[in-house]
Length: 406
Image (tube, rainbow, N blue to C red; front, side, top):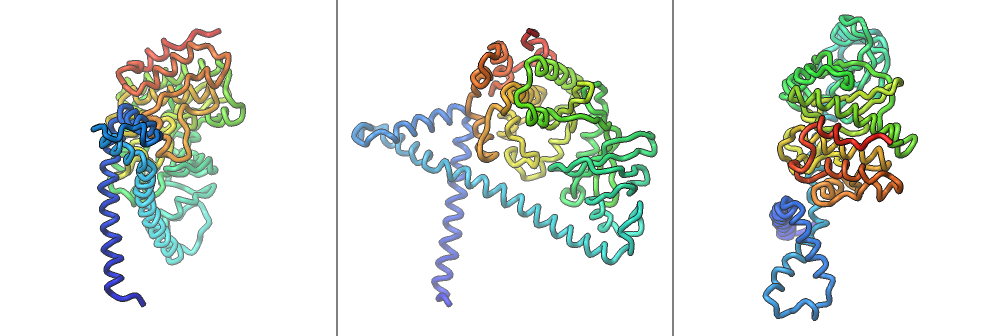
């Protein structure tokens, strides 16, 4: 066994190193917040660091500044690791808490109703019902109103089911929010406020939200059911889309965004996966307002559960306020993706993509798609301006700026 003194030294050293890392992390994040100027400064220092020592002017007073910049560059990778560590720690805490909740729910299932089948779990306790909602089966009832038909898919925020609404007498898409009421007591209020605002949007290019409710510890959202494929699926299947189709789709997305913005609703997570194209080639935007709900307290913009930094505006990444122009940046990134088959910025990690979004300039789409009319370059790159004031002022203005049809 190690001597007590050695153990104390190891503990003290670990605490000291951790505090130093925390202090350095704050300093590095301050450098990153300087935006493009900070990035240029780091790149300049990187170039200087590659010069031989005799070329740097060792007697020059600027040597101290260059040395400091070189130190920051050497620690740039550590910045990413530190941020990743913080985000992973928070996600692990949430996951651990969810596992504990799931274990409790499993015990409740064992002690509650003796039947796991049937159309209802009304005999089970509150927590058993919460667990059962993760595995809704065809025929099962929710809130005495929705009859589950089948599962449609899983997402970062929850599961989506096709259900029959006994009140509306029609099929609806039912999104079950995984554990939000249990993990965050304020989630239900936020969801209701956002859904109430989104319900005011009435436009053929926006999926209609019908209602929001809660059933034994789980929140749910009922909305218009639309059959079709997402833009993400279309690009995955066919690669870059034809210019004609891109123009038509973007025109309809602009119309839907304009209607939402008129109601004061900002999407905040516009991306190819959140745009559905019906069999009749009509565009439908889904999940309005839900990105704000998905940002749990204590999580940074780069740690959003949505996991789509490829379409996030710089102000979102920096944790600043969002407005209609935030959606227009996302639409610019989405248009870029449809034209080229990939988003404007890519990277191995969400942090790397976010850093690129905040500091780098995107390549013109025509550089990735030879023969593309350069008018599309100007259209897309204006939407991708880092400065919101340089973007289109409104969705209608962006729609009017679309390059003319060939």
